[in-house]
Amino acid sequence: MTDPGERLRSSLAADQSSAAAYGLADFDSPIAMEALRATRVLHAADQEPFPAPGRIRVITIANQKGGVGKTTSTVNLGVALALYGLRTLVIDLDPQGNASTALGVEHTVGTPSIYDALVGDSTLSEVVHQTTASPNLFCVPATIDLAGAEIELVSVVAREHRLRRAIEAYVAALPQDRRPHYVLIDCPPSLGLLTLNALVAGDEVLIPIQCEYYALEGLGQLLNNIDLVRQHLNPGIAVRTILLTMYDGRTKLADQVADEVRNHFGDIVLEAVIPRNVRVSEAPGYGQSVLTYDPGSRGSTSYVEAARELARRGVDLEPLDASAGGPGATPVGALAFGETAEPFRTPSPQTHGSQ
Ligand SMILES: Nc1ncnc2c1ncn2[C@@H]1O[C@H](COP(=O)(O)OP(=O)(O)OP(=O)(O)O)[C@@H](O)[C@H]1O
Ligand SMILES: [Mg+2]
Image (cartoon, rainbow, N blue to C red; front, side, top):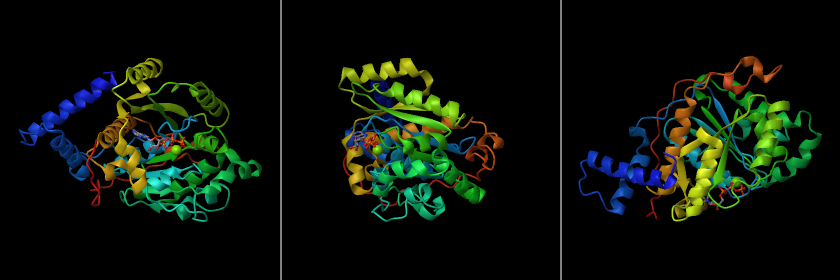
């Protein structure tokens, strides 16, 4: 099914049929539907956990175009994966620190952060924080110090490999049953040394594309850069996922952009589409993801669906060859992880009405 509008309608129909399954015959009001959806997200623990990937997945969320939903997608996919049982590490690689804000992790100047691991000698384990969204979700924050890193890194040895080496060392030092299933890296809106570090560190790229005019502009440049990184620095990198964001079903334009993206990129575009939803944009102001801020909102449920699809597509991935990381380094995708943790129930979220 390629039409996002149709997807949303069929998702609503699915809500209706699961309302019937709950024995709730009179479940046709929007508020009741929203309550049902909230219940599903809140009780992630009672539902089937997402399947663990075939190998540790390091996903770089990149698009040098600003404001397309990189951070929002990193945070909400991260929270969804964690709530449904997968250990997830979010690395904030943007000096704006928006992912850190949305996950409620302190990132004032001087807070130990990704800057200290990239430019200084800190290990990721010294700068990582557990989040309040889920015990399965960890975050390495970014502070404004990172703004200087683009320049400071220029004189650092193996400057493009700093993040990759930091992640490799962090994961290798963890016991198997605490290694993350997913590492999500939120990039800044540029193609500088920070994004380059993220492309060298990742095994795959997820590109969020906003369903707006000019959405595809600049994408060629990003894809060229990824090709260059593949040729010279990270042969394993591939664009494996495209996520359509801020879809507005009331406009023809959104459908046109979605169709164009699907025609061009085919199967790597997730079926799940993220609608434009005001709860999504409100949540970071409360230091929360939309899943914890308003679990019944359309924004919340579509991020759960996108994360479920991402997880399902990761099941068949083969572990990477241990020698692929070059001398002295083992790619994290070659390391094993232990059993999936128990899914976690969201701690007393603030639930607001949703649009
Ligand atoms: N589905 C959505 N519905 C409504 N608003 C959204 C949605 N997704 C993102 N936004 C809002 O759009 C703005 C840009 O989103 P976001 O910060 O995730 O983009 P970004 O690509 O990370 O931006 P930057 O390039 O500055 O890092 C934010 O204010 C965010 O709250
Ligand atoms: Mg951002």
